Image (tube, rainbow, N blue to C red):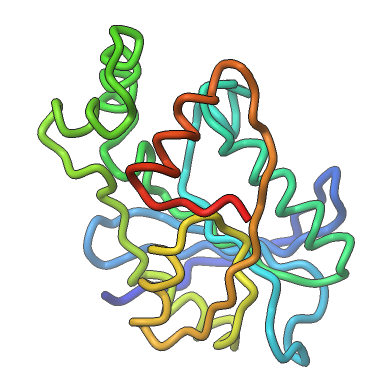
Length: 194
């Protein structure tokens, strides 16, 4: 996959001043961003989160997932360290799209877990891809990362792309509304909490 750089700008946030870089991928013509904090050029291993879009969790503060909480925690950890990268991928609902994600929520309301709901809609449990990360990391000059994730399959996918990734757990946001969801991610999707 090729990724085209679009533009960069300053992005002041509640966590500090990031630089935002916009990219477009060649396959789906989706736009992705990289948020860079501080000087990453001289870092041997860059603190990083690869975060897939979650409108309901990231922007609407949904308690059904831990996505928004993980994004905020990652931004805070990066700001505290003084440097790091967040790649924000436009892969809503594990890349099934917003409408289908809401359909999956409805099935979950009726008793399905998150994996069963995606499969009932004709999707794999997780449709996400990470091949667009390689050219984004190349643009940023990053090849070794400390990846804030609970998903070992994400680490494996990046390593297959030639990116050295050390997994750093990111445990945050568990509540009474998402306990079953998080348990399913652990039991069916292999997420490791620590």
